[in-house]
Image 1 (cartoon, helix red, strand yellow):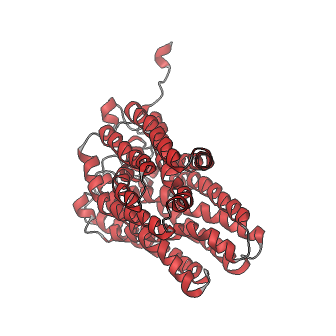
Image 2 (image 1 turned 90 degrees about the vertical axis):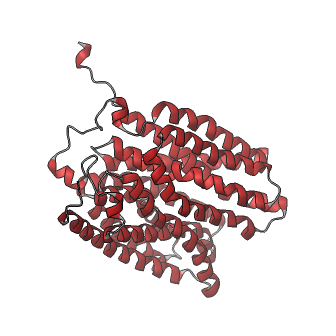
Image 3 (image 1 turned 90 degrees about the horizontal axis):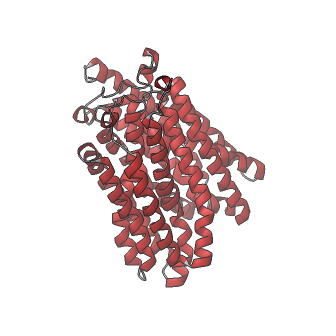
Length: 420
């Protein structure tokens, strides 16, 4: 009787493991960094701008290390890499608690960024891409939704720790807790390939030919060398850059709201709406990618993104409309974490996915370096975010063109026989 009973496919443990890992490192460590800026600068007498430079250093390190990380993941044991990465990222975060000079943040932001490349950007999409053939988009959406949900839960916890235990102890407690949780999760739940467990990817025996056109066959795709010379790759890098630049506007929402006369409580609630929208968007984009394909989903996201921009340009002084715009904006920006990996897979297949995705993700790092201070300089020069919003609308239109160009580039690769 028990012979007919199906065991739980190990792919589900992969999903649980990467969701916890990404949630704690991306939604926890990365997202909580801003909460420490005010108490640290006030206690040590450091200027806010000087301390904030460590974010830029981390972005530069990320940009440099992404291609290296892609090659390392293709070559070395994934569990060993991720456990070392957890010590680097969370351990460096904990070390901030012992620092008394801004140079400490500059120094430890380097190993922190190196670890974060593996944990927050590379591992999740690569592992889900390897383990799931059916509903791959939804699984990435679930991973990103869990990350956003954990981030929303952890932010008030971090704030309470800072208030009750002081910023030094908060850094140490959070960093140590992440190491203690993430290392066992990685060791017991994560494997690079189904072959390591003698399995096929989840849904490998159920995917139809129509589905195959949306999600490439496992181990079939373009080599890294060929991808580097394709127009599709450069169009996708540009897409990553612009969608991330659009998402960077989130950091300026409190200033934008204050300039319109809204108080801090309203701005906080508006950002909570943004996070709710991002959580829903991660799930929706994953589901839609499985149903209508990555190309159509990306175009839909960019068209939808014009709605909140229009609202903010015309009705931002209406608090209800402002809040609605934030929810839709968050929904659209969820495309950064969800659509990026899925577009990479749809365009280039799975053959050398980790190395190709590492190059494509350079657009993420560059956008963080350029857009965040760029929006601030525009506001300083004009006293308004209107030029920024107009620029964001233009970037969404450009992204539609880039998606079309990327998939035209894929057709050229197919005609040239580059998929094998």
